[in-house]
Length: 172
Image (tube, rainbow, N blue to C red; front, side, top):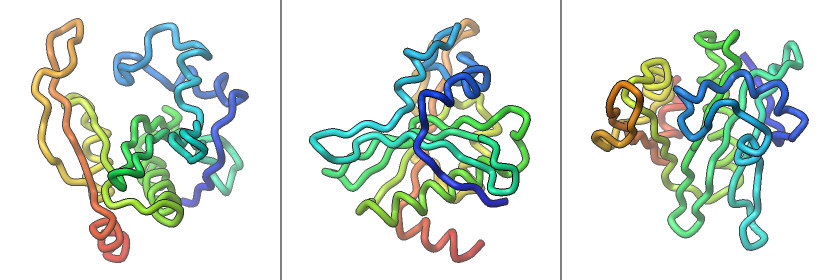
C-alpha cells in the first residue's frame, strides 16, 4: 500500500473530526471542534519547522486515510510523534504502518534526527501492536499517568533510534 504525505489543511477538519474519539485521543474533548484540531497543523518555531502536521493520501484512491502530527526538538535531534489518526474504516488494513514508515522516512531525509518517540496508553492494544511491528521499542511505562472514568492508566513510552529504523526498514 502506498501513501503520499501532504500538509494537513483546515479544510481536512470536517473529514477527520469524526475519526477522533476523545476516549482514545485524550488530548481532545467532546465535541471535537476546529479550535482543538488546530493543534494538528504544522507550525514554525523561530523560523524553522517545529511541528509537522501531515495528511496521508492513498495513492490508488486519492482519499484521505490518516493524519500524523509530531513535534521536532532540534536541540536533542528528537522527534515526538503526538498523534496518529487513521480513518476508522481503514484501521487494521496496514495504513498505520504505511503512515509511520512514510512519515519517518520523510523526516529522517529532512532533519538530523537521532531519536523518534511516541506515547500511548496501556489500553490501546491496536496502537501498541502497530508501533511494535513498526520497530519501536518500549522504553518504559509511566504508571497511572492518565485518569479516566474507570480509573488510572499507565502510558507506554516507545522509541526508535535512527540507526535502528534504518536496520528495521532494510530487514522488512
